[in-house]
Length: 206
Image (cartoon, rainbow, N blue to C red; front, side, top):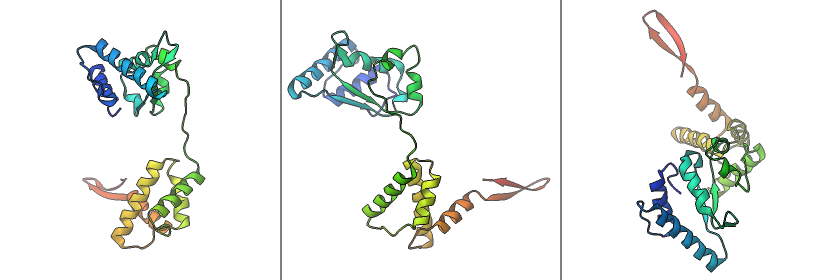
């Protein structure tokens, strides 16, 4: 699902678009029935359950999460007809403890909490990314060590820092990114600047 924060009506519209079912938001029971019939048909034909992947699931309203629970099972919860994967940040498991969603929380078969990535994994990722870019010598080893140490185990942050360094190297026409460039780039970003007020000069950090 691309828009997890939708209302229940838009939630059903998007489900209908995903699974190729014409739904009328005014007839929620009709949509409920049509989706389940489609999933039953899929299971009977392929022997596989359909899978619904919801990213940023912590943004979903509780009523939509409960609709997922009710849609996914049949025969008094004895048969699952839809596998749902909920992806989100640490607010998501906290929501499962609320009175509104405790029933959904107890039905979670597997929970995977991702921890910050280790330094070895981050270094392997950098080497792989440089190899795929056909530029294995673009970064020095000390720089890659520094990036892995300062990105908090987060690939998104690692890529953002590397992109900032690549932009700085391009402006200076440097053939290689090294730890000296890292220090210059980010030391300048956090260097105190002087501003003048009516009472004199004061230092402020930016």
